[in-house]
Length: 161
Length: 161
Image 1 (cartoon, chains in turn green, orange):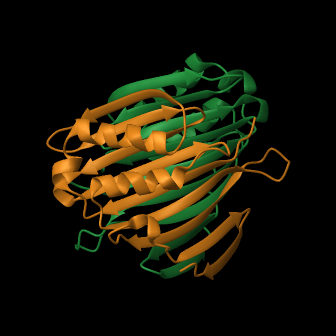
Image 2 (tube, rainbow over the protein chains, first blue to last red):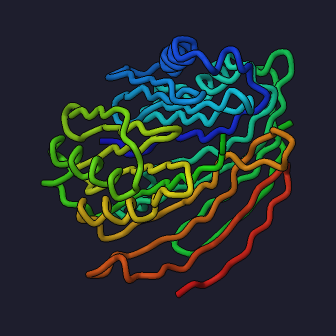
């Protein structure tokens, strides 16, 4: 079975404290994000913790979505990790951050489950930052790519804007 | 509340197919990893998926542990993300990979929820690779550190072996 997966690790800033403090709202946004990602949901677990904040996960086949919120800081730590060619994890990231009301996000996309046909698995990474305009979907960020493998590090910068 | 968190993203190779194909075994290992990490468990959700493999998460305060397994490949995609000064995420990683029977691991440690007192959050990363000797706990890997922030990228190499 295909091991390749796309894992978005996101720090979202400037979020709506009102939205990200409510467990029902956060759960609804993350379940909708799973639908946007076009993945099959296996289990959902969301919790409010003291004195403030929400922690939750959506378990999907071979991967997951998770979020942890700090309402007083306007901050969310979001993970969206999907496997399979039909999944749309980046669309799910955009949906969730827009719904949280984020104004800025720092993202690393980790490509997981890579191998060189020797069953020794590794990951590669791309990191970028976005400020969120009126319509985030029309925003094309600057990206930096890094691939690490067995001590070798290649760093290339490319602008897609 | 403190936003700082340590998130270990791990590709584990050479794992025991017999261990990582059994949902009960994988769940037990991950719950024990949470104990080793010294964190409070809020919820547990583990599932076997067809034709093979296990997906599961342990939700803890402000963060989570997750694993996805590919028994026929001897591969696990492991995440251990903890907040708080008392947490020991690296010990949990070592416990889980040893229990899965991994012979090799590729790790990125993401330090999440960093800011410069402006409520604009970002993460930094360190990536390394380890082969697992008889006692993994005595193995000190070579590390590479990268800090990314607003388009700036610094890359430094250091040996801790």
